[in-house]
Length: 102
Image 1 (tube, rainbow, N blue to C red):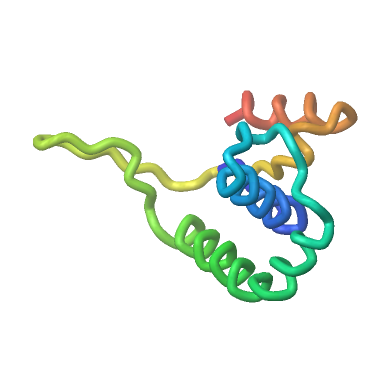
Image 2: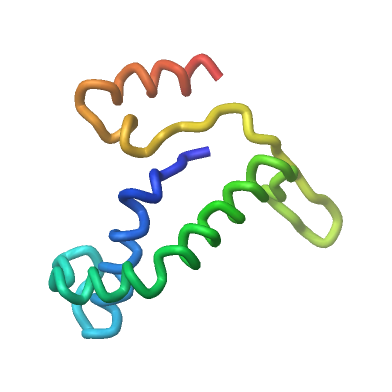
């Protein structure tokens, strides 16, 4: 499971929403600081609760990977990969090594 720290994912989520509302291409601009502060102050607790609930489901339930009318395939999480470490030049290769180990 690739997991992003909410310290980074919540501002990114806000920026994405801001770009969509303003008809701006995805992941090309950063929202104004004052818009972020207003959103953060209003929605932070709710958004963090949602992030936590999603993580709880992923960690405590078997994930449905594929389903057809006759079969279904499930998987359990065997490795949690911090996105920030995977994308970091100093730690990314070590994380790739852990993925290869299975």
